Length: 428
Ligand code: MLT
Image (tube, rainbow, N blue to C red):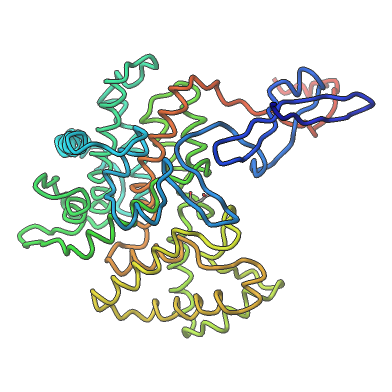
């Protein structure tokens, strides 16, 4: 027996089907709402509106649950690798050994980028934010692979674009950093694993031997897993809506990078460190800033606390917190910024004011701390988020296109001027 929901409006009754997902979430299917009742719904920020049905990621904000294709994030972060998780998200199942080896080989084979990319890179001033460089270089792939503009590409051609994206994004990210530093770029070293190759491209300097610290590479792999997908967040919704116009996957992912850049989304991890540095510069009194955060007349807000979806805790934050503690201990990091962070964290987890408002440390709070401990520069934090989120964006774009979802075109409630006559000012 299928469920339904009734709506009464101006003396009329309307009934709409209710669909239920595999985790017993229910939604009113309002596809015929406007044609039958003349009504639309209004939901700024879409907090109560489902844009699609998806089989990729399930999260439960009340229970603090996050699963990729049914696998618990805790298990994947502990036991899997970023490339295995990328394959899982994109193709729906964990790869067999031969599938994994082929996937890894394909990615390794495509890490190099066209030399002309360097001409684009050299056009950016050294103060260009790496996120702007990254989104530009990803979109530039449409120029090097114009066949990607064909919306009717077969699955082999789409898979090649997917491989190119996963393979080249670390190269672009590292090159964006090198451009900012005014250093020569490093070419990929295909003898290294995914994260080690990225770290070497980021930090190796000419005429100096660079050995990747396995502790850093392993921690980075875990961080990328934790950021790999998060259902219909702002940047993923951007990728979907751009892709829904049949724009190329490169243009869609570039749009997602730009959406992630905002301080309310992926930029939050950079804002966390900037907040901690500001507290340190002002004497390092964490309690002063905790009191400011409580003062409703004070504009100061704690960055990296609370979450739009998770009501009690962000499961990724719990995992990253442990990883941060491990990395700081293994690397012997002693950073006054991190001491301030621990004071804020303790207060958020023990002060009733923050507990009542569910202002607990989220994934951005701890990821900012761990990236800093790994030596990642602050304005590269959001680039790291993009590197992790890439397979999720790809999986969601692929699902949307395979399901032949319609072009995204929301409605509105008009609140502007009513019809009025134009009176010429004889300005011609
Ligand atoms: C994310 O992982 O995308 C962020 O937690 C934001 C969100 O899910 O809304």
